[in-house]
Image 1 (cartoon, rainbow, N blue to C red):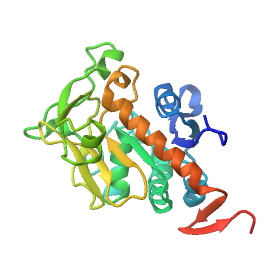
Image 2 (cartoon, rainbow, N blue to C red):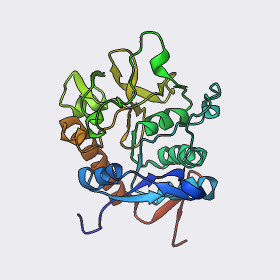
Image 3 (cartoon, rainbow, N blue to C red):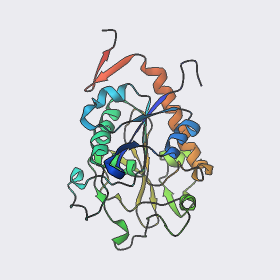
Image 4 (cartoon, rainbow, N blue to C red):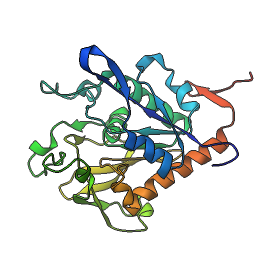
Amino acid sequence: MTEQGLPIVGVPCCVEAQDEGAIFHKVGEKYVMAVAQASHCMPLVIPALGEWYDPYELASNLDGLFLTGSPSNVEPHHYKGEASRPGTHHDPVRDATTLPLITAALEVGLPIFAICRGHQELNVALGGTLHQNIHELEGKNDHRSDTSRPLDERYLERHPVTLTPGGVLHTLSGGQPTAMVNSLHAQAIDRIADRLEIEAISDDGVIEAASVKGAESFALSVQWHPEHPLALEWALSRAMFAAFGEACRQRKASRGGTVRRGGRSRNHAA
């Protein structure tokens, strides 16, 4: 911890209706603890309030943005996809919060680390599309969570990914050509957004990681779950969270008291 305190990392919530109609804004503990312990930052849980926020003002008052996984999927109308099958879990208020926030975060130079649903959100926010049921495509493996195994064991290594030579992940891995990752997803990137660079690909051709071309700061997404305590034992997981934390510290040191709105800067003292 520095004299100025820990960098503040925004972690948007999911919204869930429980028994008797009670509504909860939720973030899994594993995500909060990974930001705190592996990135050495202060996680700030952001309620999913959609358009209630000015995304530029919110992004400008953060030092980092961490987008989590979720049981829900991005609604397909955001990427002009076919309507979801009945029973598909969506979270439209999370979509309305995260998608504009991603755009604002990139405009103001906020470090971004996105996982699973967050990986898909980043692609959609930048104009890409998604496969809704990748296991049904010819030549693709079943990447869904293996429910025959105990919950924690589902986050163990499951398949290899090939790292793009010279890319962010390749560098963070110390130059390793491949890495083993877990797999707990039914959806995946279909057409990758023009602003994204492929960082890792699975042996069946699924885009497993991406970075933002020309981003002012750290901007990485992965389809797997490096935040789980078992996955944080992997060197690459620790390296990703450490790099994100360092970018957030640099952001905190540089931003001072200036807040940007709609892509323009304004100072609180004005």
